[in-house]
Image (tube, rainbow, N blue to C red):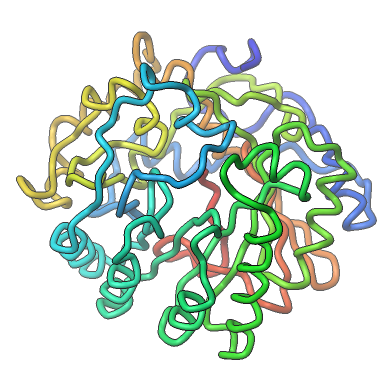
Length: 381
């Protein structure tokens, strides 16, 4: 993490320096024109400072399991038992029903995974069916290893959400990073699903992602070019270390004049497989996750936890700017709040923030992710 990110916290609406261009994207669009400074939503910051809070999160994450079948080199699973101490488990359908009922009543979108690989839950299709039946807008990430032909054929028959496949580059990069998975098998799974989805009328929005782990600009461009005409969007993202800091800023270097208030706790909550509620996805990678538990959905409704004292205290800490001895002190997720204007050329559009660069195939449509955002993609992890 750069020294610039440790500057005094507080509201800020622009950076003091230009964005370092991502050659893969500039060449994809055939334009090297300078972009304006990124901005952060003054509305979001003012709402935070004036104590405005929606009755319910705009989106939530539902951890159907924190078990994973592979060991990616950049994942919290790889940081060792001393760091990752959470009990492995699977969310019961009753817990999911409880949360999804509240989400449906409050028009909140739901990420159907948090930690782990969701398809490791053998009943994952039942959770998707439950969400779909309640009219919940849902989406999920997957490593694609368990996305069989049978699963693909079934999911395109009823699901209307979005699916993100984590692929991380070409064959060499994939097999080096995603230990326990095989590039050719995963790509075959994805290609079969894409064909099945198109045959069914493309009811599911599809994205593929690459995490920045040292791939060259040329490799990133090749990744975009390989997938963009076949999916709704391609995302290129930075990678966190176990303390929430960005490992490399090659793609999104910014000189921050002042650290803004992180608005994540004003937008979302995460529900762990055992019903525990945490303030954001970064906390689940900590050994002391228990210190960040805000409540449990078996003890209180999520809407009540959303306004209860534990998370209110957490928000006051962020407003004060005193992150000492908290995980927020080392976390860089607040960089997501810095947005560049959307750029459009032909059938492609690009959104950029301090974490992610997302390229959209406009011919296939831009997916929604959050309540009231039918034309924007998620900027999260």
